[in-house]
Length: 426
Image (tube, rainbow, N blue to C red):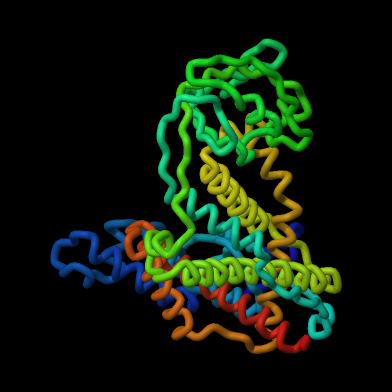
């Protein structure tokens, strides 16, 4: 087998491969055995007909085409290894010469993992900030728990701060109804700032059955660009007013929340949870700053489109998940920002390139420092995720796929690389 590589633009390369007739013999034998077992030939058991007899029944070209397919499947990975290439994504293979009794020639266009020349990553200094839990953060978290276990009742009086209001609402700009600006039995808790500033203040003092029309100036940075920094008119009818009764802050409340015997136990656990979350956010900030400094000192080859497109696809999926989590349809979100899906993808490209560079950098450092993830560590991560999502059949299916193992391996390796970088910077 002969192979040679030609470098192309956009992070791609073309591998030319030629197989002699001797190279093809084992693949022709495999093709004959397979076609013979699938073809009924009088006087021969399935799979036992010789080449000459099989050729008369199916034709030499059919035999050679199957042999060529098997040859490409076997020899393409070998050509990649022999030429010391690291490819990403599937190859584009085209047969150049395919004729019985002649050598086989094919070309494969492949996308290459970009080469990187790392800067001095061993002397990166980024300090971690001390993580503290403020009293107000603890109080806010406890208050949120009280709201979860609160009771509410309809009350006949004017709306006050802290009440939940059930209302019908119509929204207008320049006396034209806003698309999606109508709501029936919409609820809002007065004083929590759930909507634009000034809206809730206009509901104070209203009674059930009353209607009020008023105008509110929307913020400059409002997510719907067609409403941002504009006066918007509202017509609101109050259906019902609910008084919210919070449970007393005592040991009984702690037991109501869960496994806690005393209020102090609950407060200590909530404090630990807040601290853990803040530590995680600080770790993420630290990692981003570290990797940004390494990227600024490094140089990269051109990233192939397949890698960038794959990262853009992930980013779009992440955004769609975030939008749906906020109770909004992705189509409505695109409409609000006046962009198409394709325009949004184009905006994601620079960040996608940065994410690709980050992944390559972590991989390269891992190789240089012999940082590996053992099968045992990978099995433990899969087992942990299986336990976490034991009640989610679809999630379990994904967790036990080869794709998730690849993802988990990269994630664990990246974590180890950051641990390495943190240790050497001390």
